[in-house]
Image 1 (cartoon, one colour):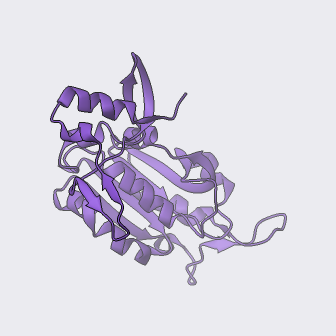
Image 2: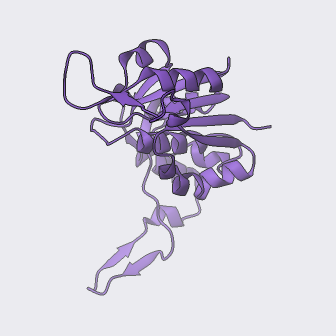
Length: 230
């Protein structure tokens, strides 16, 4: 049984093909852990031109996405288990804690705006979350939707091979000196243990990581994780 269903409303459905058909997201779909459907919002317009935007009341630069197609799309797609997410530069900034929370939902619907945004009534009456991925402006909500989907899907059990790999990564919570802190992950290294550059420099892996002493290595990892919630 699928653990998470995702529906995405956009006027540029072609933007999602590469991202949703590669890497962990493809794996999650193949394992029937996640189902993802990308919908063209114009399917829910009522006029022959399939209009999704219009000029703002009161004047202003640019066009505003209309409420009607979004309303009718949600009427068709939404269930009692759905959470509706509007991507918006004005929204709350998405973070790892929210990624964990959303990864436990059954159905997510993403609305990807364009132009100058959406009719405010979409925010006021139709959405559960208004989210941003950072303090900057993008041309639309498609890229943020992909980013958030990626962050959420990798947290669902069965997607990432080892559960332990999610427990001590950046933005996770670990206990340091008896207190729980959010951290950035410690430095990591792999072969070769000694790397010699063409300029004659020698770059070595910290000796403790080669020691085989698991307790000392664990303490080193904690000591070299950067606390970010002081």
